[in-house]
Length: 208
Image (cartoon, rainbow, N blue to C red; front, side):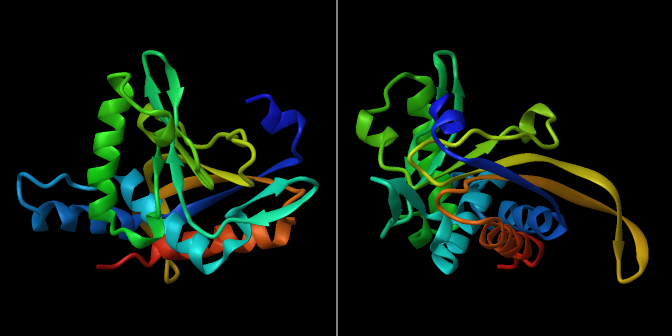
């Protein structure tokens, strides 16, 4: 973990996103899915959107390798899981090819295995990007540490109900804070900011 601080050139960008569409989308899924189907959590939906953003703008689906930049050909998202034995980050493979519902089924299995101590090494390796969500602990924003050799990690805060301005009017809305830490050796601030902006747009305009 210390390598992400001392060997890389980490920079963190933070933004606040209008999360109303995200909240509405998940509520809609609850009504659509049967009782035996896992309802995607916010983290599952965000894994899906992050994977789509990485496919659109692959600069962050990369690593620093042997003194140069290597861009991965596949998109494998690690998601941090808190267990009694410490933090683990099992991998959702080819996440850009999966729906939020498919991701939900996979993450449920991975989380259960992680907390039961039954993950294999192959389930913990090969990620190209990591997501760390502390929203369930009431955290608004934080600085996630790079999981080298990956070029970036996204920190997700809680969804907060607060005043927002829409079309010139102040309304009660929901917001979500995102913190993107990236390796400045792999990409510059402007491309990383554009990537985070694109993800924010996907969250704010989320539909079926």
